[in-house]
Image (cartoon, helix red, strand yellow):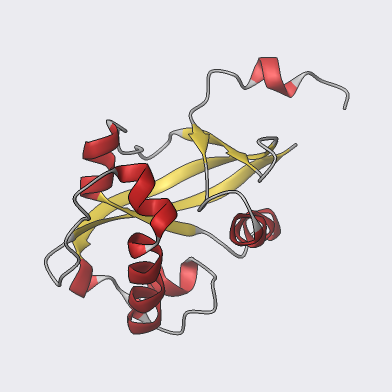
Length: 145
């Protein structure tokens, strides 16, 4: 590479999609293709981990399964809603073959119940029901590294 992106982008918050492995690799590839333009997380997850919500205009360094920066994204919008109210448009924007919010919810509830996730956020598990607060983030790639 012609520039030292690690130094130049060291100030950016890191965006990690899922956990290192095949799922992250698929998600990062979709981000790089520009077909994944949305992501989501549980509000309680952010509170437990002490992670601030991203803000519109914020840039983030997306890393791959090896912890290498692959691109920079800019947050376009952030909003929260009840788990029952995630719109189909957002589900499709996550580009994981979700046709609607029902597909999206089933897959995300499996992820949010997986042992790796529970280990990350600690006990007790987050209650997943219609009223669980979900944070919906839309973004765009502004630089490929």
